[in-house]
Length: 94
Image 1 (cartoon, one colour):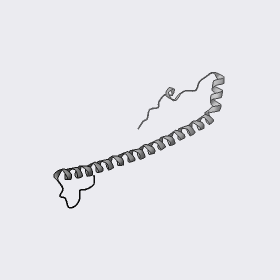
Image 2: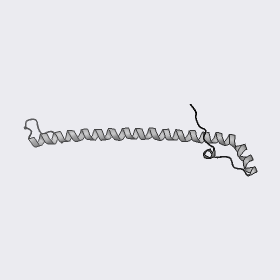
Image 3: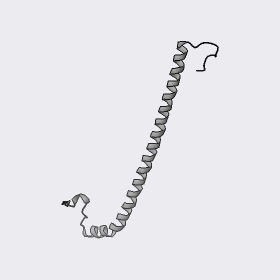
Image 4: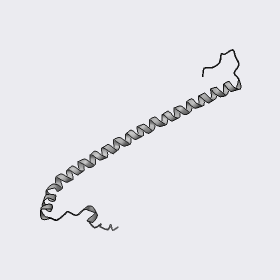
């Protein structure tokens, strides 16, 4: 809202409207800042997730390259390899 002419005195209503408009502009700036920072956080998390996925895929390829011959031998014998959950946990002694 444009300010009234300088020669005319401001009424209480005019002052209230101007103050409320300034307050709303500040609130809008805070909301915009929050949206921008959340989008930046989201983008950073998404990029980090993609990096983790690429790392896991690379590790899976490496494991497949190493375990490939063993898995072929195991399947030829009809004996499956032990899954990590099938391997007994070792106790840690201190």
